[in-house]
Image (tube, rainbow over the protein chains, first blue to last red):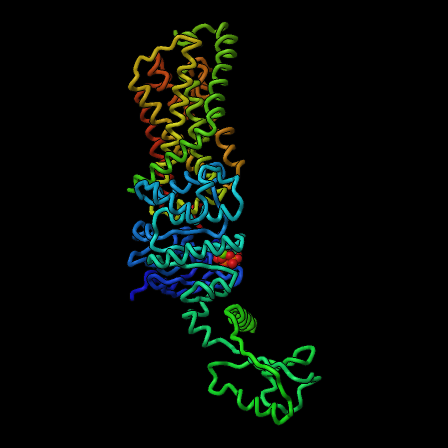
Length: 314
Length: 253
Ligand SMILES: Nc1ncnc2c1ncn2[C@@H]1O[C@H](COP(=O)(O)OP(=O)(O)OP(=O)(O)O)[C@@H](O)[C@H]1O
Ligand SMILES: [Mg+2]
């Protein structure tokens, strides 16, 4: 299927001379949830800003559903809803008024029933007549989401939607996002809670220092980069690993000497498990139990970005 | 053109005015009344007539202009500066609207408000002195053109300003003095010849003169010149707006 957003050769150098994005090429697929991950200052917000029209690109183009977002910006922007990272709201407006305002701004006719539905979905209905400044931070965040949804966008950008939102509401919010996806909305989100991306995303992009360093299906990424860990519960305490054991560099002994972990790459030709077990047997090390765990996206992410940093330092 | 967006911005701005109704309307009414007490009663009793018009009545067009200019500039500049300051401008920038819709929405609302205030001042004046409007159509034309031109100026200031001080500087340090020196309270003909010449470099002279002519048919300059100057000023502001639009000056990074 054709990508709904195509970003080509995009670069951004701010007036300060700082280059926040370097030659970004990225396609977002129709109907997917795409998680854009990266450390602070990597350029996530800048990238989103350029696609949505709040930041001017220095070079490159963005097309949204076939519409160039500069030369045909009206058609492009109509499709997009943006939830900004910063909590920027009017203070004195009521929730209802500000959400209705957003709908008008995007040129859509009034539809009170639809706005009521959004406010109810986001648990804001009780607060509809309250002034925004009287709301808590998490509620303001949801007001921003309601504003972004007010014009029924086909594409939704969520720049750290869950920052400062409590656990329960976060679940509700992700439910809203899942429902949106089910209705065909394409969602691009950033978050520093990697486990959220792991839960939600279809694909993951990692950006570091203004460069996209990886774009992958989440599942493929997890299995490709995923390391598995085999944990052995030893019958007897071990003070140190016997010298010359197989796979010593992949083995680690816990502090109290009762657990041995073996980390291996699921993609490698041989995992080495058989030889490890044989080697343990030879050394007379017995174990009571064993378990394997797959590394989380967070570990993958930290590994990637960390390597990126080391790479840049060289 | 996205008319719904213009309407949304316009109504948003008018609602903002509505929330501050007391200070929006009461303050100018109060200060107008004070002008009448001070200028009309105290000084006016000494001057009695200016160009054959009762002094109290003579200052009415000047007073309306003073408010019109100040309010247009302050409303429009604040209106667009505030979203920049709070960050809510992200929404204007990401909406399917161009700079044109933004300008029409903000400038339209600011001009509407200042025209309403101008009319309120006119009504207040009626309570103090007799006011006669010889050419209502001209009067409305000047009111409208001036309100729009200075709201555009205010909008430009709001875009240019990167702090609250800058918002204040132009109205307080340029527009107020120029209005006072522009014949709001006297006829330019009472000045010595040298100062008359200097005064004609002040664009506001032409606005006030034309506006007063539409009331009492007395003017410092021919009314057609006044109209032409008003249009030139309007065109200059539109030119700057166009340039901002072309360059994206201070709107986006
Ligand atoms: N207006 C600006 N002028 C100059 N530099 C800027 C501006 N905005 C952002 N930057 C710089 O660009 C880089 C990328 O910023 P950006 O906000 O896109 O990062 P981010 O990935 O969203 O980070 P975070 O996770 O902290 O939100 C940063 O180094 C930042 O300092
Ligand atoms: Mg960011």
